[in-house]
Length: 334
Image 1 (cartoon, rainbow, N blue to C red):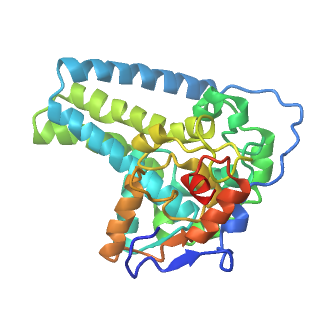
Image 2 (cartoon, rainbow, N blue to C red; image 1 turned 180 degrees about the vertical axis):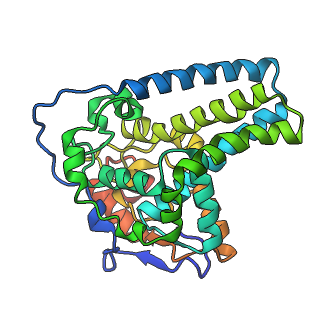
């Protein structure tokens, strides 16, 4: 399961189940819907429409005038930003699935800012809501409202009143106490444009004489759009299409396609069943989980530690009790 090194210090089993953040992130009972009328946010609609039109133009420039190194650079930035979300905002700060020393925290906060999906404390609030009230009206991107809503529509309309009401119960004191999180939140409106758009545009222009037009539309706008959709796939596809080997009673699924592009975040049935596991998946020879391998690397050099995992015994018992029968262990067991 976990890598064989001293930094992976905590393996959870049936007798050692209570992780400090577990109860807060367990899905609660279905919230009864009240009369609710969706209110569109036209500013966001216009901004997203403009962004997507610009990214389409960016794709045109990739095949007509942009240098190959600019496209490679844009793909690298998308992966760096995604890493800031997956290893930082998600596994480190939302779920506290492992701990990080200041050099890794600094790297993750820079990568998260590059991804531009709100400050970590705001992202973590929504994601803790998503786990605690999964697939209810209090879930910010409730998958039961359809593919488009949970993919990106939730950002184009006002939040459901239950999201605001239940959001008051989410404890963010651990994040408020983190100086990296406080610094990012305080200066986000300065840091985000600089890290996400200005520097990615200027670097190709300065270092390999790319045109500012290509830099802006390819390395900034197209890259940013790709990062958004990759993250949104976890909220949509990974909640709708795939197997449920760990818990067939919940919406999240195991999806290889999402894991390929989202650096290992598509093994979502496992993650919602064991949200405190730093791997967010079982590790097998066929599993694609770039984020886990990177965290393991940082553990080896001492930047990450106290990596929390789930025991094989606990996984097997859960598979037999609540899984849909698709896990390989089931066939071997019988």
